[in-house]
Image (cartoon, rainbow, N blue to C red; front, side, top):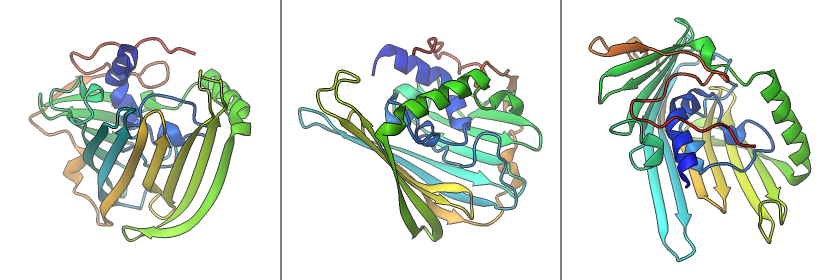
Length: 278
């Protein structure tokens, strides 16, 4: 992973986690990108960045595991445990521990942090348990891409559509929840990125219509390995209200929105992300 990717991951990790759908699942033709950990950070909440799911409270443990085998036979296995909560009003809380991932967590001393999205108060908050600080930003500052970006996404999806296939996998029960499966296979033609053979990137996604969340997803890219995201220990009980509040002993710092709504300032010590490259 080069320095520019590391910097981008460190500077935008809070924004990535507040997205409601992984980038890899946001369109039928996901473009090649950074390693799966950057995309698979427990944000499989479904529905898109503006949707608030009310009346379907739940809590669960999140598990993200990435495995990769290098050319010399070395095996790399990284795990990122966490938790997710949503109450009846649509407020959500994500707890992440990215210490095993490394570069993504460079801006957080322990790799542990908490994200709270509160559509009732109209705020997004990132808690750093190590420094006991809360970075608070207005909810409207985390919207989707602007119109120009949206047009660009549609154009890229159209251009790639010939190399993408989508398959319905039916339904199955995962952790006591009925989920509908979809497999998306994207082929990078030989020569497109210097590859002498076609590269297939496969994503399987199991979505619960009842809970409006992704229960399990697997993303396999030969360049990066396989990443699996899954909810376990799912409970349909109402989470405690205190989970969606900033603890009294935390110092609150106000953030601000950015161009794409990913705009709160990066964590202390994190390098600024580079300008996007086409």
